[in-house]
Length: 237
Image (cartoon, rainbow, N blue to C red; front, side, top):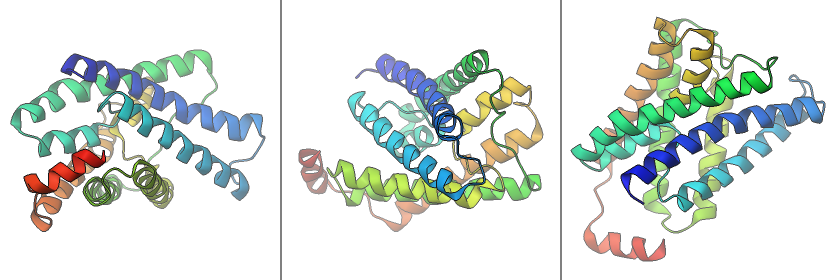
């Protein structure tokens, strides 16, 4: 898929990702009637979330690289050369943000009573550190899975999905455990808070620093694959 196709895929997947989170909440807490304090309801919500991650992993494979999270896009851009880095930062990431903003606007139009997105419940620097640490671990895991389990779509997606849910739970009471600046940006834009110090430090600066540190750490600790190692990987995929 060419660059234009990737950009369009990013726009659509970002839009769909934001809508999917809303629909899962409506299904669990609305249609099924579970309260937000009911452990059974939370377990069911997490199961639906994992299922949705499998769907999006398949869509990413189908679109040959479409993404919906700026952090994943940034990590990929940093790892694949200067030109791809510029393309990721100045084209793909803004498009992913636009997709999320459009999705939130559409959600609010269809469901005016819907929630207002993640909420910061700790001090700004504590929140930025939390989102940064969560992002660091999920990026390290994602890069490790891509290298250590080539070709195993189900296993990689399962491990990655469970890890994301686990990290989300750990950070949910502090920052929302988002690890996706675009999705948060959509809700912050709807509230008129997308340029506040809180939003920029916690949901952008912290995760971006965590992503860059994770990519650097992974490349230092793990040697890049040789051409001979890349060939079996390509065949398996």
